[in-house]
Image 1: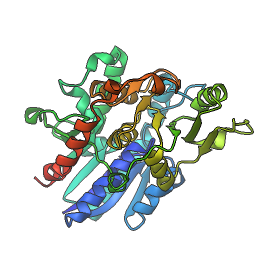
Image 2: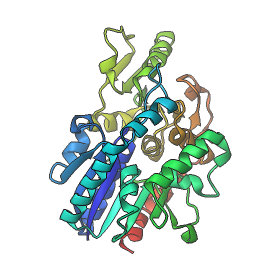
Image 3: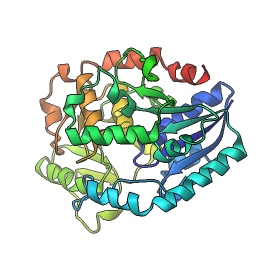
Image 4: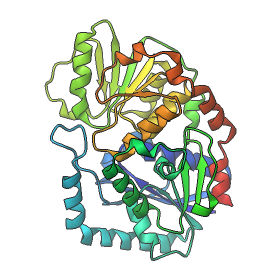
Length: 357
């Protein structure tokens, strides 16, 4: 069968999910006809993603994006809404581009990694099935701690889910725990997509804390902690181009996001402290690492990720990067990691079976 991928390009989580599903589909003899990524331009995509999809047709579309707050840490909701309204004619052009691409490729089905333009397109072109994949769809499951989200976050969640997965689409909710499917709601539960390269790693503890931040405004908190804890080594990944001439403490190393180098650091770190991206949490939990999550401010997806990881006993969370919390936690805070690894290993083909069926 032939598929087209639609991917929300913010962060690395949806890109990593697409990369892993691509491996699984190709291994089963299927084909990826094209990928459509919602981002500004191709240079915004990390090198590991571009290399993995170098031989597949790639289309870039301009889709709704979150705007950062003035501290470059969280999301400014109102600044995010205005460009969506202002650029609505542009989005109609992008949907037309998608229509032409689908007509050219003639795929058997569409697979959407939380890209809203895919949902908007499919509302009026339901000739083939749409599979919508993401942890966000698990947020509507009874097992998810929905009360952990504010009223406004719940509204934002429902709105974005509705945009990316219209009525009639098949939703695949990625979950940290094994939960019941809800066929009446077109909702099926599957484990996170852990990359083969992660599964092959042999985790070690080489005495440093690994950190990953979505927005560069969090660097100041990590720098401050390193200055107060000179005996602890921290290896951090993120967008360091905005650091300027800021002086870094000797025990802190900051790198641009590199797929190979990040995986090596994740396998060898003593613990992970990161903004609460779903894939980063899942990969660290699979390798048995203690995890501290700091959800990006006003980001309903990351707030939900943190609440769910805490429910599954995979991680702890905090509102800022106090890495000392990792030393104070006892084993029960991460006691769900064994069950999580079994869930991932024993049901790794469930997503493929849903799509093929």
